[in-house]
Every structure is written in C-alpha cells, then in structure tokens.
Length: 304
Length: 269
View 1 (cartoon, chains in turn brown, red):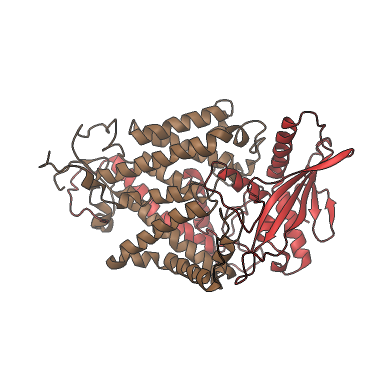
View 2 (view 1 turned 90 degrees about the vertical axis):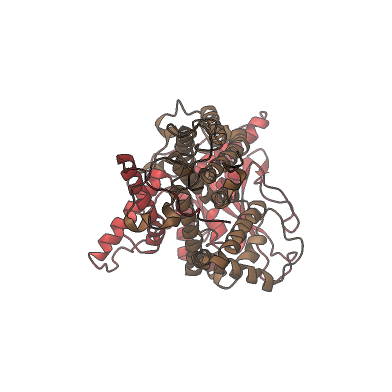
C-alpha cells in the first residue's frame, strides 16, 4: 500500500491536522471511487424514478413551482441561487432532467467525473432552490457529497478517464480529506439531531415519538401489522435518542465503532423502506460507503 | 472495517491550489459543528419569510436584552454560516423528526359548481383505511413533501398545543398566508389536472383546500382504536375572480371564528 503514488492536490493544513494520520495520510483511491459510484448510481436512479416522470409537474410553466412560487428563497439576505431561475428558457424540465441524468451517468462511469460532479451539484442546488417543497434534508447531503466529489480526484480509480497526471493503470492513493469530512458530517448530523430532539420535543423525551411515527399514515409506508407494546416503542425511541447523542463518543472508542456504524446503516436502510422520506436513506448510506475496505478488491502488485 | 490506511507518503509540494483547498477543508471543519450549533443560539438575523419553512435559527426577540459585543459576534456567525450554506447548498438542518406530531394530515381539494355536486380530490398518499395499508417506496415520494406542506400547520399544530385560542388562530392564518404562492399553485395544479381529464366540466366556482386530519391512537392503545378523522378548511380560491394587487389570492379559513377571510399579503393579523 505504502508505494502507491498519491493523486490529487494536497491540501495545505495546519500542523495539528497534518499530524492527524486519520485525517491527512493518503488513503486508497478505491474508497473515493466507491463513493463516486454510489452517489452516481443513487443520483441516476433518483433522477430517472422521482424527477423524470413528473418533470412537468415539478418544473416549468403551469407546474407546482411556477410562477415564481419559491421567490422568497432568493430574496435578500439569502445567497441562494439557481440556474433555472437565471436561465429559465434554457433550463426547461427536459433539459434539467437530461443534463442531470447524463452528469450522474458520467459520474457513475468515471467519465470526466469532476466535471460531471460540478454539473450534477449545480443542478441539484438549482432544483432544490427553485422547487424547494419537493425536497428534504436528504437532498442537502446529496449536494454536499457532489460538491466534495467535484473537488477531489474521484476518477483516480475505477473510472473511464483518470485525472491528468495520474498513472493510467495500477492502484493509487488520494488525500482523504473529503471522505473524512463526510464522516465528520455524519457525526455532527446525528449528534445535533439528538440535541434538537431532547431540547425541543416533549414526545421524544416521553418516549412516544416512534409510536406516533409508526401510526401516522403518509409518513409510515405501512400500518403496524400488530399492536406494538408501548414499552417497546418507547424503548426504541430512547435507544435512537441515546445512539444519536452518543455517536461521537461511540465512534471514538474502537470496540463500539463498528457496532455504532452498523446501527446507523441499519437505521437508514430501515427508514428508507418504512418512512416516506424519499431517497434520503440511500444518500445517507452513500456516506458509509468510503468506510469499507474497497482496496481489498484491487489485486496487490505482487499478484499482478 | 478500517477507518485508517496507516502511514502513507505526504511529500507532495504545497501549491496555491493546495493552500486554497486547505482553507476550504479547515472552513468545512468549522462550518459543520458551528453552523449547526449557532442555530441554537438566539440571534438577531432576519426571519425567513414567504414559503421558506426550514430554517431552525432561534431568533432573539425584539426588545430582549443583548449583551454586546457577544450578541454581535453571534449574529455575525449565524449570518456567515447561513450564507455559506445557501451558496454551497450544504444547509445544516439537523432536526429530523424532532417536531413529530401525534397526527397525520392530508390535503383534500374540493371543486364546487353552483349547478352540480362537488368533486373531492384526495391526496395520493392518503390510505383508504389508516389501520391497514402497505406500500413500497415509489416514484411519487417527492410530491409527498409538497402536499404535506400545504396543510403543515394542521399536521404540527393541534389547538391544545397553543397558549390561547387567539394565538392558535393567529399562527394558523399566518401559516396559510405565508404559503399563499405554493397553496395557489397547488390548487391550480390539482384542479387543472382534474379538468384536463374531464373537459366537459366548466371552471369550478370555488376550489377549496381542506386538511384531513387523522389523530394517532394514544400511546399504549391498539392500532385499531384510532380517534375519528376530521376536516378543517384551509383556503378557498375562486378561479374566475381577478387577483387583487397586494391581497392573498384566495380566502383563508379562520379556525376560531369559523369563517373565511380575505387578507392582504403582509401586515399584522
């Protein structure tokens, strides 16, 4: 591993970050490539399944977002922006979906992946701002992942086009700041979710929230097949709350790290199936992808 | 599951790109926690208006004592991270399901004519039987985000959660008035789709948005013992009535006085 050439721009960091091996030491490029492929795949499915069939309902004249329904998103002091708002004649529903889908496909295949990530990010932000009510917090993490991919050599491996200056074949390493930042964002996300629940929700504090989530048509995709004892739903409510609040600690301690991450991944998988939150669960699972040892799929130099 | 790959070479020279990238990385490291935390600290930054309903920033009430220069630092921090999140599309809104209510609520749109029975158009996501239903993840999921927001006040705000009927009334009306653009777009879209499929029908005299509320069973009760569902009118739009400048383009239901009101877009209630 140590003789892999390092691809990409080395971020100039303060000393304490440079000396933090986990944050600074180059990582196998397969992890970044796996993230790129995961985001590209989920984004492509998202566009084809949830936008394309309804594009005239969501964008353009006569849709649910026009005329200028979400103009307040662009009013001072906000700095929100949208290509759709700037160039409405260019970014018609057909153009939005087709350009976006091609960008996702290029990202997936690793064909000019950084350019693809920039395009996908710009359209994702534009769509979110011009048609805000069709989106939820999962779409913010989609945008975040795309922005980071645009700034990294995410095509260094498993890509049709590799970044300029990188070896044309063979395993390489990358500076890991993007996948580390995404992990830190996961930590912040879970912890602050817990803080808000404790601080502002009596139903989380009394343990009744999951009872209400499971019994709320619309949010829950299926009614509970049997009566769930309140002690069980309250127990799971408190378990979720404790897991969110303790997540920063759990991932710091080696023996609890993997169980905490497995619980997180299972939580996103379960909520994707059970709750009407669109592809949020899938985008969140993408944040877990770089944590897996994808480099084991690459034959070692001696094997080659 | 390895989180670190161990010691690998870091001997690449520093470049201007590297310096910019390092600045970005350091900024992000600060923005994640501070951008989330500062929303919990009361700040004097302008309240979101109009259709925006996702900002969690706690506001410092006007007239509340402010300790300077601490308060100015908080205001500047909140402003800076809000603008950064808008510019890059990385909003820090980590309060998922923290305000989950004890009820479900769906929009119903009723088309009425003077000379024929009204037509009711239910929400796609409303189950026929709230005690027994099942569906898989499906492509219309994004429409749900829009539809529940048309009646979001009745989803999150049962009257007993408010200090007084006057406060309940004020916030209910304000919520509909703030969303007048999306509400009108929804009424137009929903009625337009129905009329397109029924070209023999004339333009309805009124198109009414109704909140169909499904209270959940109380904790510990059987899922089959649901309190009865009920309806609350939200807004009534007259498609043939010309829009008046400065006025909400439909009537808003007053839930305390049980009558429709015609209101200006801005101003006190």
